[in-house]
Every structure is written in structure tokens, then in C-alpha cells.
Length: 234
Image (cartoon, rainbow, N blue to C red; front, side, top):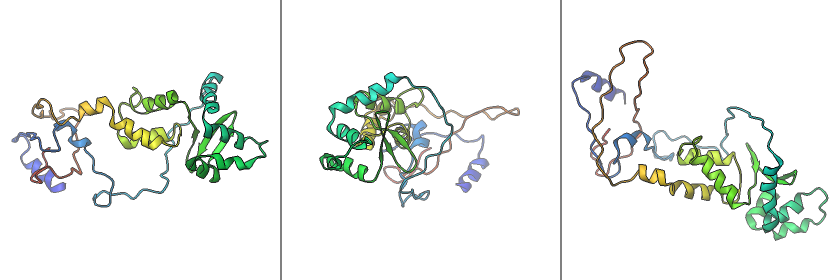
């Protein structure tokens, strides 16, 4: 990377950068967002922990109305696993054989002590998080929307969307549903389309002339090979 920077410096002001669309890289502005998968064949591969730690940036304490908790807990009565768990987690429950009626994924999590009941709401606990367990399809869709589509998320990447959902709520198929929701996002499908009108040339960035002048550049690193493995255009 350094030798490329040095070579570019020698021709600074005397060259024009032109984007040539390849089989994969169709959009010139999207190259810096085309990240490689975090796999061993990636030079920047970072091994992940079995349960990655989630950094806590800020703790916000709010007073949530009882209507919200009622909306979360009321659907528990209509779903078998939730209804059984609510009974099992009650401190007065004596019939522990009910655990055999749970589906396998619920039974495993219960045996590992990951479920807790507080004020009628089931919480799912992992090493670094403890979140509400959702049953209502409406609430699950709301969580997916807030963690990806809302103005507070801005159509985040797949990994960051998964991270936001993970610290927001839990259901047995949360990972699968989040990935499917991400890949069916209409905004992302349009932004990353492989067909459409050709984009214009890249625009030369004016050099800053005064202290503290703000300007923006893209750092393009770790690009996968182009279709013909001839060049990586940037």
C-alpha cells in the first residue's frame, strides 16, 4: 500500500483517475465498502471469540410504561414454548417435567440456565447480554426495522445489524431472520445493483488551503480480485 501512495504522490496533479467497471465492482463509490469476509484467507483476518464481547458505549436508564411490557408478555399465552417457560421459571412451579414438552432449542437454552423470568417477561441471557425474549411477530419486525431501516441505523452492514439485534431482543431464529431481512432490504438492493446507468467519472478533490479545513476521502483497502483478475479499479 505504501509504494502505491509514493507512486501516486509522484504524479500528483498530473493524472486523472477513471473508474472501469468490472464483473463485480459496478459502482465506483461503493469500492471502499466492498469488504472481504473475515476468513483465514483474508490478510486482515482477525479470529473471533466464541462469544464476542460487546462494547458498552453508554448506559441509558428510562422509565418504560406498563403498556410496553403488557405488549411483550401478552402473546406468551398463545405460544406453547413461551407458556411452558413462564410456568417453569415461576418460583412456585413444582412440576419440572414440563421441560420435556419444550422444543429442542428451547430445552437446551433452559438446561443451560439462559432464561430468567422477571415481572412476567422472559429474558434470555448470554455471557455479555441479557435481553427480552419476543414472541409477537409485530415486535420482531419492529426490532428488525429499528436495527436496520430506521434513521438511527441508516441501513447498516450485515454484521452491524446483527450486533444491534443481538443486544436488543432475542428469539430462537433471530440470526436467520436478521440475515434474511438484510438481504431483502429494498434500499440496499437498489444501491448495489449490478445493472443500470453508468456512473460518471470520479471528481478530483481540491487540496485544502487553510488550517482546519474539512474534506473527505475514501481509503480503499482489501479489495477482492476483479472478475478477470486483471486489475482492481479505484
